[in-house]
Length: 162
Image 1 (tube, helix red, strand yellow):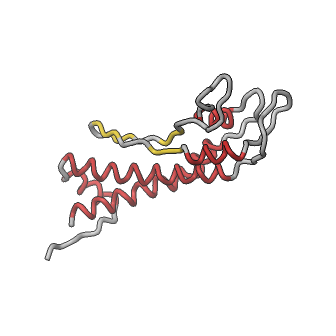
Image 2 (cartoon, helix red, strand yellow):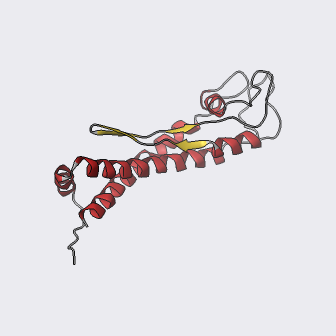
Image 3 (tube, one colour):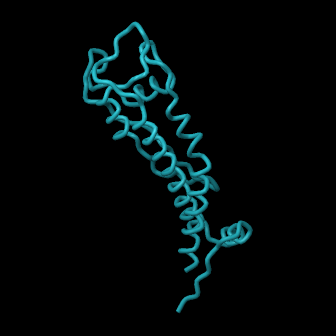
C-alpha cells in the first residue's frame, strides 16, 4: 500500500513543489488558478443578481441606476472562465463576458454585445449611472480567491504525491 502525506505548511508545500516535474507543477498551478478564479466568478454572479432591475428600455435624459431583467439574466449567463494558459512559471486564466443579448437594434443587428452592457454598468454611460459591480466583486473575493487557490494547490499536490 502506498504511503500518503498531507501537505500543510508553506515551506513544506514550496519544497515539494520544487521537487515536482514540469508537467506536475502545471497541474498544481491549473488547479489553484481555476479554484481562485471560480471564487471570483461566483462573486461577480452574486453582484449581478444584486443589481437593481426594471423592465423596459433605457431612454436618454435622466441617468438611471437600473438594468433590464433580460439584460441582467444575459449578463449572468454569458459570464465565463477562459481556458488556462501556462507559460513558463506563470498560469493565466480570465473571467470575462462574451456574446450578445437577444434584442437586435439598428446599430447592433445581432444584439447588443454583453461586454458593452457590462462596461456601461461598471463605468456608467449617457443613460446609466456608474455601478461598479465587478470592482466590488473583485475587492470582496480577493482574499477568498487566494485562500481557495492555495487550498486547491495543496489538494492537487497531495493527489500527485499519492
